[in-house]
Image (cartoon, rainbow over all chains, first blue to last red):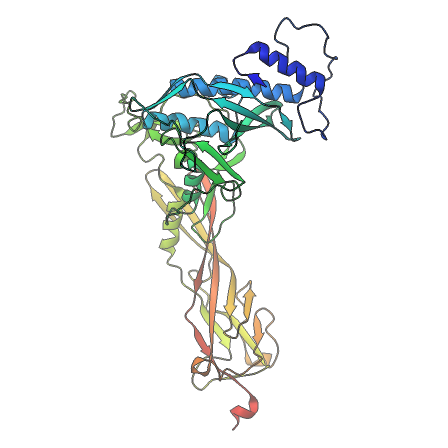
Length: 188
Length: 299
């Protein structure tokens, strides 16, 4: 598990995944995209470059979540940062979300805490579930805080934290976030 | 989520209201709606954002082209693709609460600043100046207007045995069916155009097949006009579109089989930077055909 805003945590996860071979289905071989050397047994002193597809996908998802959270806070989109990390439905959904927030006078302040689960390599795609904690986020509609912030389909306040499953696909050689699914009825 | 639902509605012509009960299935994809605060789900199997390039009988669909690939003409929030701007044109700046000055030489009567939704990759999140009439006109709507102007009709049924009080066919003998005196507006091809503002759509319609309901429970699908019967054919089967009745029609209402012909129209349209297909059916009024047996008819 890894905290989105913890670089060291990210390093630890990446290294742990590389060393244990964890990062996909047990029956699926881990695909090595480029020839690499075995991980060094020495303690890393700087952020390592992601090596496996799972590590690369996790790193891309982390970047996407930063871009998304910033876009929602600022209610604008910086395509220079979004283009490299998102595609498909997610790419369109974020644009629509930002526009709808402006139209509905919805603001979001504070920071999410993202804790990524183990990537699951599906071959053509990689799934990663983010345990999204929004304790530090305040949603306001026309300047008034909305409580609860979100309501689940069963009519109850949406649990917090809540798991969100992301699907990443290869786009011109780069893993990009393509789909998201809020697993509202499941615990993290 | 909303985008997918709106896109689907737009593709269906939005001529009816779909009531969606919130009872997400195991395959539902869910996300939060930032505005309403609700978690909304849609069914992965039942949605689709314009990926379906086919057409049913519900008004047609359209695909647009961008960088050599097909994309749905309807984008996020029901926005409409603009080939000129290479994005889906979203709400105006005014709808987003912004009062922006028109570009030099333009007035608010000439157009408006709009959000541009980009397919990946996006370029600029700046508002785009869209001139009045440039977008917002759904070419599918124009295609439907063009079709309406064609004033298409069902075919005129050609059939032997003929219909009439003193006419009857015999059980087991060939029945010939064809399009009688086909015209452009009963069989096609026929082309018409419709325009609004700077957008013009051209549509060409033709009948792809005719489904004959013979009234005895038999459906005969014929792909062409059929072959008109002539006396020299004698008791031959129609080479293109025929049937044989196995029973007399005496137990039918009014003592006759009620025959209808349904022509399936396919309309290919292009314009406004888009193209698509619209399909629909036109059915004739029932035509009574009496069928008897030789010994009965001679009594």
